[in-house]
Length: 517
Ligand code: ME8
Image 1 (cartoon, helix red, strand yellow):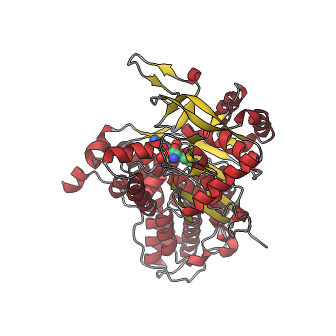
Image 2 (cartoon, helix red, strand yellow; image 1 turned 180 degrees about the horizontal axis):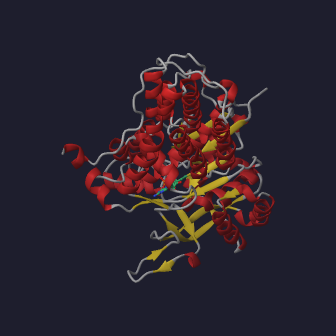
Image 3 (cartoon, helix red, strand yellow; image 1 turned 30 degrees about the vertical axis):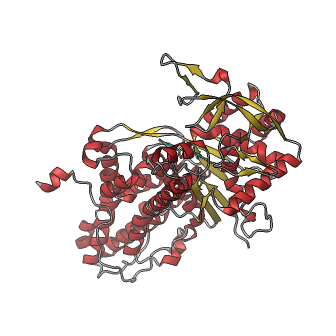
């Protein structure tokens, strides 16, 4: 039977500078979502990339005295390097300056034009270069500094030029019907409400080309115009699936199951993008999820790390899985959150080093010492053993439901409540005391504990892939036996299997000053 497909994208980032923590956050979260679906048996296509056209790129390049292409090449490489450093499992990395993307953008333009939705006119209005966005005057405000700002707090400039327009006004009712019919189209619900009221307030036609610069994709049939950067940017999601070639090998992935984006760009994804697709006669994505922003609120971190917004410095300082775990567990996905030195250290030491790391180290060391370094025998299971094993399996159902709604923190919460319970179980069963009184029962308790660690290790793979792999290595779980279909009891650890010598997987974070002392 063909596996169910799952197509997930991140936003494509502007490579006008190096990646920052917000970019890392989005990629890590999307990676966890993609890995989860892969482990759950789906045929996943996970896309990320860079959004290389537009005035912002052009202006930054001018400031640096290089061409926009050089700027894009330099920083796209930084984004790829970040992906590797974060252990991102993306299947493709798209750059909007690629030939495949120019062809695709011109094809969607022609399809929208063929549907009668593009006309030439004159644009006069406000534009934010930082947001690459047009704003209605009522959305802007004049501040005491004499400058006008858009709704995201970025400065806007007055633009007046000949421009092609997209008949967005014609899609107002169709969009409202879409949100009505498909309440899951925009998540979380706060974002949905904002978008519904924005669309209800009335949609104006959208300026979709520029003539005052040429860093962009030429408008088909009118080379004096380049496409508005968002028309080309959004199109990346179908380019990577092979558009306009609907016989392409990847086309079956479209429509995307979820576009993961930051909340600041929900309007582009939940209003403009479905309207473009409806116009071009292309299926709509199933869901757009606008996550929150992460901010730095910890002074101490800046002292110990130096450049706090460089995600790779955070990885070097705290460890990759420590950072991944922290960001995914601490910040409810969809809401804004903060990161601070104390919060990262707390999570690292309390959840990873103490709860999971110690449990694994203590139980596996006991097995190494008392059971000849092989998986112990499992005798008759007590009610406590059974309840413990059942809880581990129930966590999959909870995580599956949570991950389908991008509630990543809830999935991790369910998995780590199994870890907490396993610690209570281990302490309560006192296998060290059973050693003398009932060695057979000791083996069963150690087997059950190791089996829980196997299940938790399997479930943790999407979030902390490197450390989860180490845990599973310690249990001699073969690499081809790590999908979620192996969670069930029939795949439990087999008594007598030789285990490697246990080594700690989650080091405690120790303050550099304390480590030196
Ligand atoms: O918006 N916390 O690119 P971008 C969390 N090229 N997420 C953040 C963040 C923060 N502090 N700062 C930014 C663009 N982001 C467009 C996208 S998609 C067709 C084109 C998120 O480099 C932001 O919300 O400004 C967006 O989802 C992503 O990082 C890239 O932002």
